[in-house]
Structure formats: structure tokens, C-alpha cells
Amino acid sequence: MIRADVYNLKGTYKMIEIKNLYKSYEQLEVLNDISFNIDKGDIFGIIGQSGAGKSTLLRCLNGLETFQKGEVIVDHQPISSLNKKELSYIQKEMGMIFQNFNLLNRLNVYDNIALPLKFWKQNPKSEENKKRIDELLKLVGLEDKSQAYPRQLSGGQKQRVAIARALVLNPKILLCDEATSALDPQITRDILNLLQKINKELDITIVVVTHQMEVIKQICNKVAFLKDGHVLSVGKPEDLFVGPDKEIQKFIGDDIEILPTTGKNIKLFFTNNNAKSHTITDLARTLNIDFDICQGKLENFRGSMLGSLIINVELADYPAVQQYLNDHQIGWEEIG
Ligand SMILES: Nc1ncnc2c1ncn2[C@@H]1O[C@H](COP(=O)(O)OP(=O)(O)O)[C@@H](O)[C@H]1O
Ligand SMILES: [Mg+2]
Image 1 (cartoon, rainbow, N blue to C red):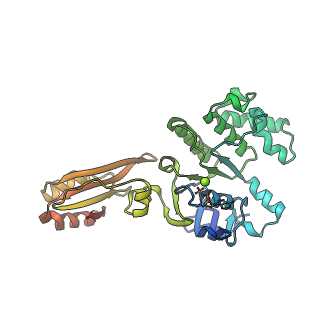
Image 2 (tube, rainbow, N blue to C red; image 1 turned 180 degrees about the vertical axis):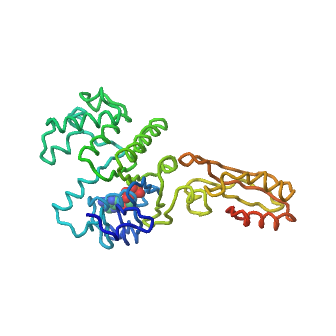
Image 3 (cartoon, rainbow, N blue to C red; image 1 turned 45 degrees about the horizontal axis):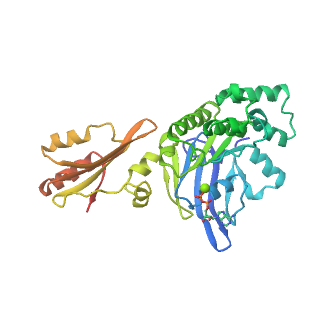
């Protein structure tokens, strides 16, 4: 049954609601007043430096970790109000994968994938479950590896087994804790493509915890930026990372090189709203001015090229340039 109030104004379904979440280990505050929602169908990223509280937050979502204040509501059930049995049913709806794969070395691929079925007292060799596991092996591209042991697999293949295992109970949500952090860039891309496929084809909401910008850029439609247990910002990756937030720029290493000391240095932000217009050439043509391009960075966000560019304009041209940028709703800031 679906209640009306779990739909937000756009008609989307709130899969996970985090409300004023607070957690400490004795004196150490690890999560402080965390609030945001994850909608059904999202690939939601949680990014931040090591020690920011990402893994702890993720473990609060599926009840592996308790918290002192606030609430986590999963599929409209408040986690803290559930008894042990109810909690285990909610945990069944949430598969999880990790950086180090957590496979059992003494079991082959098939039996590793089947482990959660055993936990739920199901026969892993029943016709239905055999069919299910064969489908999953196909989905993750390991049809020919069902009898292999973990030591015979590459890192990418091990993570594929872990993904199949996380999906064997048909969850609604997949939680990923640094799932690609131990993999090289090409294998990372393959695993991220697989996660995207799982999100689309199986309609599974995915929460991705990572310290890697590449992961967020490639697959996430939303991201929360975590620092010292606080959420600094939540939004679309392109708005967060292309925007002027200093903390976020520092995190992604978007340092400013040496800039001219005469004229005015202006940083332009190319976001989805304006990325397609011919801003630079149009600016020069419309105002009939010259300027220097000092530094620029364009990046691929799920197929859109977005980024920023620093230009140096002559003092006399500055007011007209400001006017032009505001009129065309192009984000900008003056760099000192
Ligand atoms: N079981 C624990 N006991 C005490 N402190 C912990 C425990 N787990 C994590 N921490 C601390 O909580 C903070 C956040 O850790 P974590 O959630 O693992 O961060 P991240 O995943 O972002 O690297 C760190 O300072 C860490 O040392
Ligand atoms: Mg962690």
C-alpha cells in the first residue's frame, strides 16, 4: 500500500527519508543533523573525504548501525521503531556491496550468490532459485564462472559476484560502500555501467558511497556532499561540482592557477542551463571586445559537458561583461 504523503510534489516516491539524523561514538560526533531524501529510481551519491561519516551513514540506512537522534524512514517505515523481525524484513529489501567484496573463499560463485537464500531458509538448488541465480549470472556477465572460486577471479569479477549476491533476494535498494575504490579505472567504468543497467532494468534505487568524483559524475543523478558528519550540500552533481562552493572546489582539487594581475578575472560556470549556447564567442561578438582565456575545465556528467572557465577582461569592459552574463543567466564570480 502506498500512502499519498510519501509522494513529493513532482509525484516521485520517497524511498529513503533521513531526518535530522545524529550519531556519536561516545564523545565523537560522527553524524550531525543529516537530512535528505532519496527518491525511488535515484542513483544517489554520498561523497566526502575519508572519515566524513559516509560508511556510518550508509549503515544507519539499513539498520546495521543504530543512532541517537532523528529518524531513517525506508519505504515509509521508520527504522528505529521496528522490532528485530521487522528490521530483518526491511534489510531483505536492501542489498549491499563493499570495497573488498566480502566473498567466502571456500564457496564457489554459485554458492556465494546463494548465501542470502540460505539465510532465509530457502533451498538454493530449487528450480526457482536456480533460475534466479542463472539470470543474475547472466546479468553480471559471469554465466561461465558459476563453478569458479573467488581466488580464480579478478577484482572486477569478484565485485560482479557480490552484486549478484546482493540482488538475489530481489531488493528494492542497493547500497554500495566504495564499491569501485579497489578497482582500476576501466573496470570501475564497467562496474558503474552495470550499476546503471541494474538501476534502469530492475528499477532498483541505488545509494553510492564514494570518495571518487568520477563515480558521481558517471552515474549519479543526485549527490550529498558530506564533511565532518554534516551535509554541506545536496543536489544534482553538475550543479554542486560546477558551482562556486569553496569547500567542494577544495575537495575536488579545483585549485586556481596564477592569474593575471591586471584587468578583472571572471570565472564562468557552464551548467546544463547554458552549456549549449556559444557563450564565449557570442560574448566577444556581442560586446565587440577581446579577452584572454586563463584557465578552464570541462567535464563529462552523464553525457553533458559542463565546467568552468576563467577569463580576464579589461577593466573598461567589466561592467558590460557583468551585464551580459546576468542577462544570459550565466553563473559567474569575480576571482580576486
Ligand atoms: N565503531 C566505531 N567506533 C568509534 N569510532 C568510529 C567507529 N566507526 C567509525 N568511527 C569513526 O567515525 C568517523 C566516520 O567514519 P566512517 O563513517 O567510516 O567515515 P567514511 O566512511 O566517510 O570514511 C571516523 O572518525 C571514524 O574513526
Ligand atoms: Mg567508509
